[in-house]
Length: 184
Image (cartoon, rainbow, N blue to C red):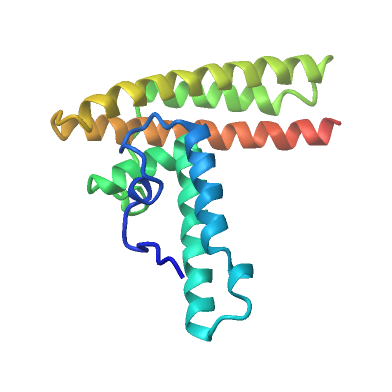
């Protein structure tokens, strides 16, 4: 059995440069290659140790793939690699302008069902959410490009703030998706 290093970071595992910008095609290709080489089905007749190792490696590869393909998860992971654990983050302060923007979007989302044309209103809200998320992603690309090249840690704090905003907007986007399903 070809043993994969279960302690390597996700970028090393997929042989990708550590970056916020990831070639999703290369990621998918490498994922398929890794999974085909260690998939548990290939070790159905192997010993207990080999089967257990195959399951562990497969789970690690799945976890790494899911993390790197999603911009929010990828940003959180990059921060973690740089010593900032978003799960341990107890700072709840946010930019008041962003909070107002987020509250306005939330109010618009809540008003969708009572509007004369809920589908159109929801489409507009989704468009605004998507634009904000795209802006945050552009900001993260810029911050991480400099930070990973050796820019000061203060930029990691800026990236942390972006990730927190992205989390808010992603939750709002998920709520909009649920509302869309309800309307259909």
